[in-house]
Amino acid sequence: MLELSHVHKVYRVGAFGGSTLRAVRDVNLVVKPGEVVSLIGESGSGKSTIGKMVLGLTKPSQGTITFEGKDVTRLRGFGEKKEYYRHVQGVFQDPFSSFNPIFKADRVFEMIRSSYFPDVSDADWREKVLDVIGTVRLDPANVLNKYPHQLSGGQLQRLLIARALLLDIRLLVADEIISMLDASTRIDVLNLLADLKERGLGILFVTHDLSLGNYVSDRSVILRKGAIAELGPTRRVFENPLHPYSRHLLSCVPQLHRTWAEVDAELAANPPEDVVLPTVSEGDDSAPLVEAEEGHFVGIDQR
Amino acid sequence: MSNVAGAPGSDGTTEPQPAVERRTSETLHFAKRNPKLLIGSGIVLILLLLGLIGPLFVDHGPNVYIGPQSQPPSAEYWLGTTTFGQDIWAQFVYGLRSTFMVGFLGGGIAFVIGTAIGFIAGYKGGIVDEILNMLTNVVLVLPALVVLIVAVAYLDIKGVFVQSLFIGMTSWPWAARAVRSQALSLATRDYVDLARLSGRRTGKIITTEIAPNMSSYLVMSFILLFGGAVLIAAGLDFIGLGPTDGVSLGLMLQNSFTWSALHLGMWWWFIPPGAGITAIVGSMYILNVGLDEIFNPKLREL
Image 1 (spheres, helix red, strand yellow):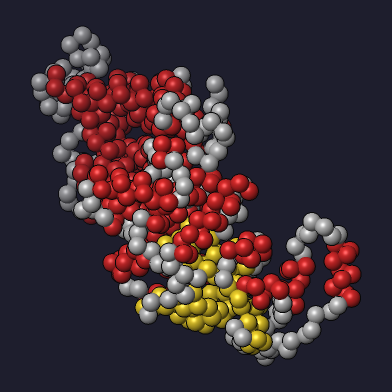
Image 2 (image 1 turned 180 degrees about the horizontal axis):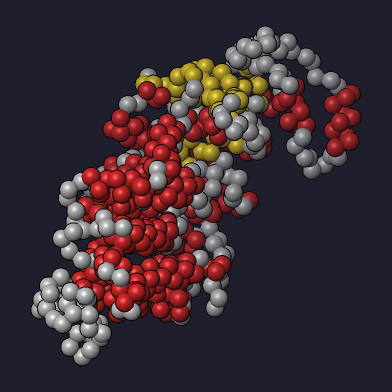
């Protein structure tokens, strides 16, 4: 459904744009219908940039992003973009800044209506809105006709998901949507994502939290410095991490029953078997992947 | 603020007033207690009314030679007469009218050009931004007064409209820069991206998402452009490049200067126009400071 092929994003940085920063490096990725793919990485690993490129908010410097056979980067004109957003929607990290503070929160629904459903009658529209609000398990009386600052982060985040559901979406880009939520609302939103997956939606789940990635996704992609370090079925990636960076990342997850010293000692006692990582020559910007076991790829090691 | 977002109870019925109502009434609350705003807007309004209504009660043109020459203020001629017997009160109220006209037209044209360029440059970014920025900088470094002098001197049409048009076309750059920098920071907010995802056009995003968030900023830019236009017009008039078919406060100053009112001690000829210009621009700036204090909570003294 969604396919990224050799996608690069290069930013010009410095006072006069003299030097460059490769935020995304040669990323190849597929999201199938009904599949949740986690993009896991630390800050600056390019995961949010990938989300933005998929949503058409920034253009990739190189490579193609295709959605159902159409090249997203070549959408020309306002009409084609609008049609694209009918099927692909995003939810952003910070629910408080996703709402214009001077308007009521449910204005996000009205924007969808005026753009995509100008002919729907008031009664039908109200029913539709109440329906999606029910889907995200909110009480309409609590959230409609309120200003963003009167609602909690979890409510706002779920309103944004409800907004996306008003459209006939097939792909949802969820950019760190859990990070701003407290633990009790977190699980609601995660279960909601699982429901959406049941409906056949593809979800690109951007996160820096390993356990969330583990909980929700079918396949995981671990990004480092813009390139894919490891890609595979979530279970395989977490049980048998092959890339040194993923191992390091997984050993950094605090564990309830063990101290750091114990974890380090165990890792030193049974060193994991090594895989041969692909290498690239100096000055080569590609990032090849090697299939270590079925569907489980490892990428280059960047220092 | 008392209602913290997400606090228990804040999403219930404890909040009887919607926020915008509360915000406007809060603004009004501080507006009514801000002496700078009250004094500034009071003076501007009085002068505006004088310019609008005053000419209706004058039954002769401002440049008609009607009475005795070089008369000091009297009951019949409130502000006296010129060397040629023109009524200075009539000139003053007509002059106020054209001064406000230059302010609104010149300031308005500069405001429209400046905000349009600023918004587009700030929102679009990239190559569009660079081109518009270059244009802005070019106009910014032009010596505006010299260009105006040359343009006005070589063009035959001399009226308030043409003058305001030229003033508007040369005084927009700083407004464009100011708006651009604000738009640049607002354009990166998530709700702007969300509006794009909602299938909104660029123009609509600028007018409904970005502009309302900087409305106080826009009001203040207009006020400053207004004051600037009045001053530039007065300067042009004073050096003899004003409208030839009418009267303005700057032209009155120029005439009084040409006919040595200062040396002859005819204070009633040059003080009213000078005081008028000073009062309009000065009270505009005071008004601006007052507005700033109201919109920016950090500056509130109350």
